[in-house]
Image 1 (cartoon, rainbow, N blue to C red):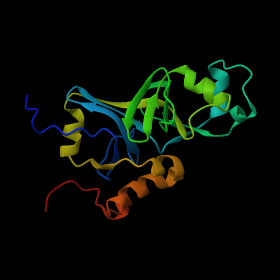
Image 2: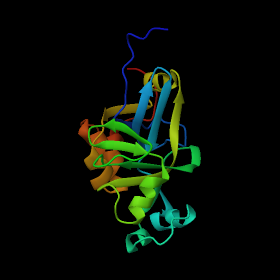
Image 3: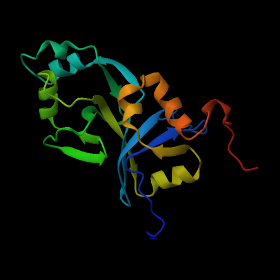
Image 4: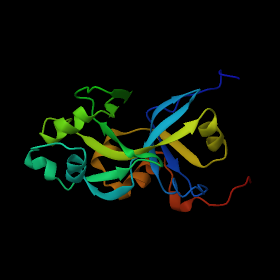
Length: 190
């Protein structure tokens, strides 16, 4: 296997192009949290669910939460893999039991301690909670990139935490100077 051409997309956004036929990823913006020769893991950041953070706190059995836990903050569908498992994408002002550094200013945590801290208003300054993740096996993401189903750009905490979910995909594409509405859904070469 040739490794000299490998370029990690960790801490990058995957912007679904109109060629994306998989309904799990059509019109999604995914943050790549880990990428190696063995595969990739990402979290979709623009698919809100009907669940709220307060409901998640109750489901995981966090007792006596502060008023903040009644928050109507939205929980996101992070991807089609392990959709019952929670992932917290957050600012890296603190580390938790199972934190993975994604890049400057971003961590991904899967341990319950972060939810307990958030329920008691002691969590990170910025957080996005998702159920499930997106996963790719060895070479799978690279193949999809070669098929032009994704555009990539450096991740931006401002897009994740300060941009409304329905505007995140467009904002990431705009950072590249691309208007997704002008891209053709037809695959081919000129």
